[in-house]
Length: 331
Image (cartoon, rainbow, N blue to C red; front, side, top):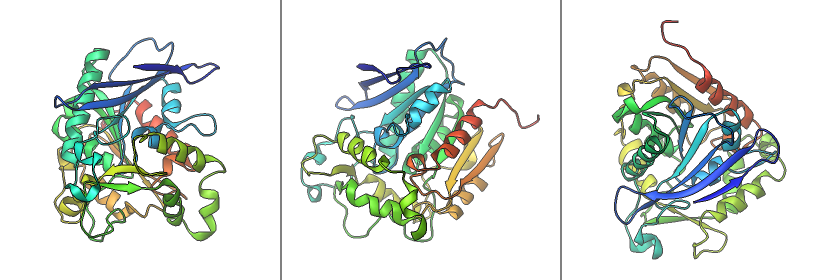
């Protein structure tokens, strides 16, 4: 376990990085934790556990400090004990043996079903270590699949659920699936991804979408999440999430039933999201029939990567506002 202080001025945020036992003997799960140094105590209502998407790990999506703070820093400064989980095959967690070979030598690894086991193990660890009985849960993109499935299967442990640009059913092909045979993993070049990222926005808005210096900080942090990659300037991403698209999301076979989720839910969408279109997010939202209350927020002038763009603060405020409020459906 490593601990660092991420802020030199008040409020002081401390960061811990640790490996915990996964659901299988040869699997270790990497967790990042950030909280105020003087946090008075722990509770389910003030604890948030986050799950990354299909391609980039939690450090890359949630903990790149730009303009003085990462998403995790902002959440911690708002008084939350915030955790980010890496599923096996991502970031600091164990990588399946297939990822040590050429991708074409293995079948796709780490589907949502597998990642759900890792996420559940992480939540169990957090609840034990903090002596709490539940947590808030946030998932982004493919990670929203894991978060939604976790809430649908064990909603007694989930105080509130936040689904950021959530993967859902689509009658059209999705950008993450380029077609063709799938290997065990994908080779992803962050520098090449920049064009895909900016390309979702209208041409006139692409330059301003990511403030100067932010992409370079993100690229450096992203490459650091896979220092064992044999591919220069690239990371490895398991192909299980792409298999999920083929087997579930474009085949009208959802991984979970939103209608079984019994906690408050926030769905966060983005105007220029070319990966999870608004009609997909709205269909998911409409199916949340058991949620005591629910909210659908669309961030304007933002893409699928809204948490690392110039309008990210709108997304941060929507998440923190939803977590902070104490309301019931009857009030």
